[in-house]
Image (cartoon, rainbow, N blue to C red; front, top):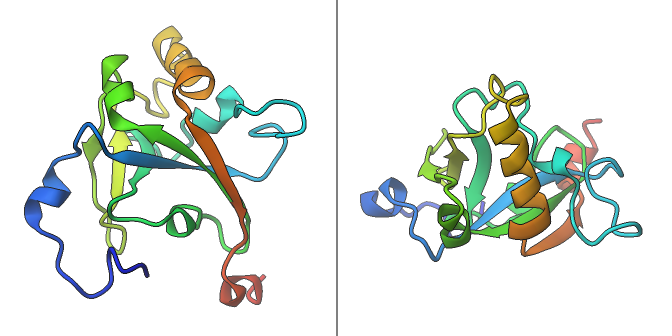
Length: 153
C-alpha cells in the first residue's frame, strides 16, 4: 500500500471530489491488441473499452490516492501498463469523472458515460477513440505483479 493510502484516514473531501488537475490512471493489459509500443506510441481503442465489471462506468484510479504500481494490479499474476490521463482534458471533451472508492481502493473513480452495457454505442466508441488517440498523455510500465502474486500462479 502506498504512503498515499497507508493507515492515514483520507479527508472526506478528497474522496468526494475529483479536481480538474488530477491525474488519472487506466490499467491496460500487456497484450499487443491493447498497446504495442513497437507499432504505435498510443494505446489502441481496446485499452479504453469497458469490460463486464464496468457496469456503472469505466474504471480509472486517482493519482493522488494511488501509485501507478497499485493501479497496475489487476488479475492475479498478470502484468499491466498504466495510461495517464488528465481530468480537466476529459471534462473539456464532455467525459464525466466521478469518485467511486472501493474497499481497499480509495482512489478508484469511474467515467460513468462509458459502461459495459453501452459499449457498442457510437458515443462510447467515439469516447474510446478520444481517450486513446487524443487524451492519453503517456503510458507507464509495464508493471509486473508483486512477487507474492507471481508465486501464486
